[in-house]
Length: 224
Length: 183
Image 1 (cartoon, each protein chain N blue to C red):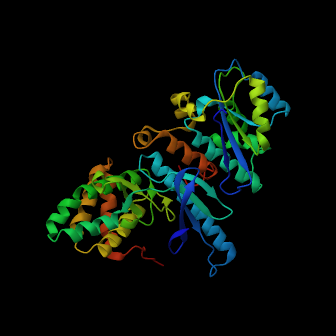
Image 2: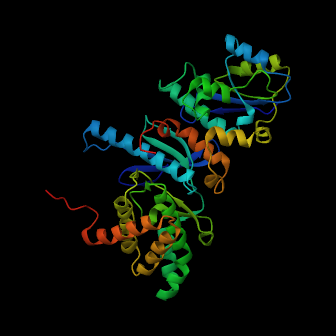
Image 3: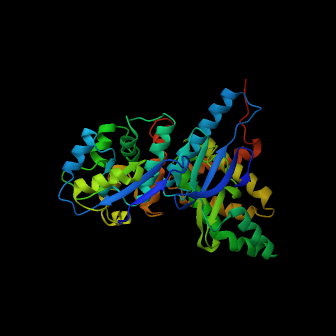
């Protein structure tokens, strides 16, 4: 049974030998040349699985992978049951609390966990590529702050401050457009990110890149 | 009847996978000999490398799928189960660390497509034992050996169960060991 359809894939829920499972099937895109389509799909499945696993190895919670089927371009993975997206959670908090500063106060612990998790991820040179509050899940009671990162289809492995800065910039844009009046919360994420990074010169470089990227946008200016 | 598990493959419901655990054995020598000679067709896994039957299910599920799609690395589906279970790309190393040895006192058996449980019966006859509950494997595993074989990190073990870490590695083996994507 299909539960969700995005631009890239369909999600089905089911059961994998007794475990709750999500099947993510990347469908064929008819507007792309078949060879290119196959290569892109294949590459995205691989990078998704690879980044998922590398996050796991670094101690970041991600869904467990059960099976990869290259014949049907699908990944079978653990369904995180009883979870809400960070996006839903922030919306709930914002809706229930009219006072802006107390919203920020309530979301602060979550912002810290997000910042720490992203710092851990970047320290291991994993670039998520599509950071949004919909790609972060809170398992169980949101107060427990059990954060899962999902959807690594656009991920890559880069050591450069530029790529990490862009990753943060993508999140900032997504964050501020899905959650109006949340600049303070996002600043909390950045502060926790900075704190968590052991290599201070690296975090400084990434954050100053972020400032630079804010001025010019995600794409680097091409010269020549 | 003893408590072995017989399950249908998720993609090929006509195919079954039988999982059985034997403990308290004198040795596996005779059984191993029969498998080597080809008179018994089964996969003999080292029980101390298995934390949960689900770990074996994931490997067997994958091996059967690779068999059906002609993508196997080894010669037959039973050796492929062993190879899938192991994180190593080296076949003989995989057999050495994840296959049952002659002097093991327990063995975890997987049989693909065992009609009327004939193979399972033969194995029980050879070993002179009936299978025990497969879940009992949870009390036989060697954490240190497993950590070493799968290269589990302290960071990950502090966050989620060993089983999750193993399962992801088994499912993603060929993707993570191609050496693509730097470090």
